[in-house]
Length: 255
Image (cartoon, rainbow, N blue to C red):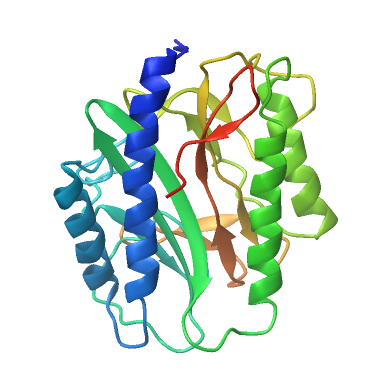
């Protein structure tokens, strides 16, 4: 079932989204050579706690996961595409880090992700991140009343394929609201004009995940969560929670 949110609900989701934005900014600021992913998770926990928010990630266990997720952020490094477990790995110079974070506040969810490099960027990382960000921007621009989910998918995929980047086939964006994951699914590739119609009050988490090597296949790590590129190439991930409104797309996960 797809729920259209009221304008009051959109305002409540904006506050949850603001908490997510502040958590991501704090994590990026704290990220430095020698800092562990577990320590970054602690930074995000502090932001959520101070805001009176809880994490929809912590303890999350969808049908595909044999164990609940142990953190409040997904911290994916280098060849990790998404769902990276925040463990004791300590950041090194040149690491490409993707951080995904969610918040529940007053019964409403926000969800966003950013990618950044630690220290000296490796060749190609800046271009990979910029293209992934452009794919997100293209998806957001297509999130207008009268379009369909396929228009968002097509816009994202067009940017990725033009840059010869890969996309994990089974993962993409999703509806969001009272729960972190709601219908409809938002693939990162698709045909324009197809899929669920976009109407005022629909809220979507739009999240391209792009792979530098150009292949779409991936493998799940031994922790049962982290998705890694099959060819060992690096990946980037950007995400925003976006409301479709009669006045155009409204990004809810800005500071």
